[in-house]
Length: 241
Ligand code: NAD
Image (cartoon, rainbow, N blue to C red):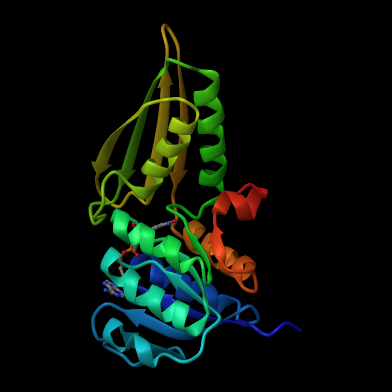
């Protein structure tokens, strides 16, 4: 029997953190959450056997194999430093990172295996492929990306919309973005390609954030034990770079 992977959940009190804790607890043969880290001091020190730490106490967390991060941009740098110091892998889904924070991620990937993805759903990874192919096949068509999320989402356009836009641009399109914030929408992305007299709409709708949490945990288990480097969802799923 394999020993479970020792996981640190960063952003543990958030919407994604709570989904990660629940899914990890459902599969104790695969995951042992050794630390759950929150931005502010936790209200309870141990929840369902999992020790909680404030971000300010990050240096005192026990040994872990991989950190899974869904927090806020300002929390990412200290976690990067910890993972590098502990030689642990990092899976991060935090969006809204500034260019300097993206550069820090890339620099850390020289010493640890690291995967940052704006979206951990398998469906969006496939959509991303389709967008690049469609844009390449349709030179000169207009490309608009419309994303909708719940009212609490802080960054806009979403990280996923920007990733889809990068793929469209690789295919030769010049994407424009529109963002809607309404109700409790988990996440919707529409990529519209419009020509003269016809248009294509490629849409992904997430109805449950477990898809992101499950994808991030799968990525964590695939990343553990790999050499240092910057990995991607498309790379792990489809074997591209
Ligand atoms: P949330 O606001 O519900 O939770 C944020 C969590 O981060 C909380 O636990 C908070 O205590 C913690 N936090 C805040 N500041 C921190 C700090 N300085 N250090 C450590 N922890 C800190 O947010 P959410 O909806 O769970 O989303 C979290 C992030 O994940 C956002 O950037 C969101 O866009 C992104 N996200 C990514 C994906 C994906 O597939 N990549 C999917 C959903 C959400």
